[in-house]
Structure formats: C-alpha cells, structure tokens
Image (cartoon, rainbow, N blue to C red; front, side, top):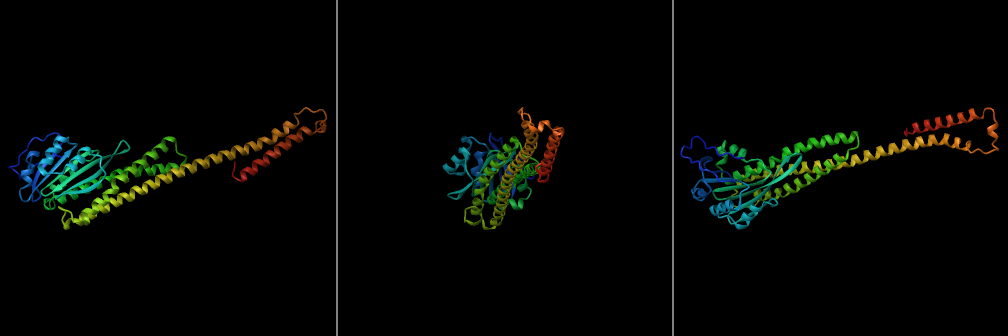
Length: 341
C-alpha cells in the first residue's frame, strides 16, 4: 500500500489518522508534499492557488466515496461507477473534471487476476480509487516525489504517471506467460500434450483474451488524452500520453502474438497426436499382415480333409515352413522399406 511519508523539510506538516480505505492523502506545492491531510480538509486545500491534492483510496465504501464527492463536487454517475467497480476502460468528462477507468492485472497462482483503477482529475486535485488485483501506487508517489520538478507540472502529470505505471505492470504478467508458452511449445514438438496441458492452454488463451479486452479500450482513452482538448490536460503533456499509447499498443501486439502461439501449439499438438496414432496404426496393420500369412497356411492345412495330396509329400512340412518364413520375411522387409515398421 502507499505510504504517507512527509518530507523532512515540511516541519509544519500534520499527520492525521487515515480512515479505512484511505491509503494516502497529501497536498503538494511546486512538486513537494507540504502536508498530509484528512479527507474532510481536501476542499479547503485544493482551493488554494498552486496547491494540488493527491488522494489514494483502496476499495473504499460508499460513505467514504460520498465524502470525497462532497469535497470535490464529483458527479453522481462517476461515484456510482467507482463504487460498483465493474467498468470497462473509458474516459468521461463531467464539467471541468475527468473520470477515467483503467483495468489492472496481476498474475496470481498462474492465473491473470484483474482489478480496476478509477481516476478523478480536476482543478487542484487527483483522486485514485483502486479495486481488486492491483499493484500499490506507492511506487508512483515515491517516484513523483523524488522529482519535484516533474511533479510540479500538476494534476495531468500525476494522471500520466499512474496510467504509465498501470501499463508497465502488464509487462511482468506477459513475461511470465511468455516463459510458460515457450515451455509448452518445446514440449509440443517432442510429444503429444496431456489433458492437463490442454486445459492449461485453454486457460492461458482465455486469460490473454480477457487481458486483450481489458487493455484494448485503454488505447482510446490515451488517444483522447493526447488529441482532444480536454480540461486539465495541457498540450505539453500530450507527448507523454502518446508514449503511454505506444506502450499499450505494444502490449496488445504481444498479447495477440502469444494467443497465436498458443493456438499454433494446440494445433501442433493435435497434429503430433494424429501422427503418432497413424504410426501406431501402420505398425499394427503391418504386423497383422505378417501374422496373417502363417495363420492362413496353418488354417488351410488344419482343415482335416481326407484327400489333401500335399499331406503325403515327404518334404511338405518343411516346404510350408519355408513358405511361411519367406512370405513373412518379404512382408517385413517391404513394410520396413516404406517406413511402416
């Protein structure tokens, strides 16, 4: 979770006790945190010129969201979306403020777990609301605070930093899946995969599809931040949002590539299995053909008919054994030559 360490220079900073759901709440001037605040104080701080309030919430209840809404005059629909946390990535404008939804992802016990981050951005404030599987934004806050010059750009820079962090955290998930996909590929070429591996292939493809659906709309969100004349997004920030867009598209391409690899691996496993079954069928057919020769000859001379001239031959027994041996040897050689044995 995000911490609330106050810089040593801010001797006048207060340290209020945070309520459940509040991860961090600070006020920044010129990129430096000057105080940690309670939610009820946010409105008075954000109205001061040059002050930016940055609040981080994790799975807040409706009462806490309502308190935040009153401080920043947030729209009812945005609060309703943030409370239910089952939204697709989107960006909406309510008056002079923006409401942005992004999906987060983490790899938990071999499965991709998804969460959501809701961002409220307006004049003098940014509020992030996390739900579900998500890496803490303490690293984002620490990185921004370590570079006051960049953080001094304001709310839109914090918005960029969070979105960039969300997109960057897709990469470890894809890296872990990519290693597993390569192992499956190598195994598929060696032998047919088992039922358990087929189920794993299916689960990976489904998770990657869900990831694709989760990050796809984020391209449009970043595109609007880059190109549309939205409030609180200055033109100087557009190249940074363009960089986020490029990262999202790269993640999309990697996701699509791995889904194709998994599809090829599954098809290859089917082909390998069919080839193995065909090889076994050929071997069985070859040995059946070889065995059929002595079986047929033994069956003929085992019919116990009285008048069978060959039974009176002195060398008839040896001749039949030789015929069996020659026929079986010839068939065996022929099947070996064509690769059936």
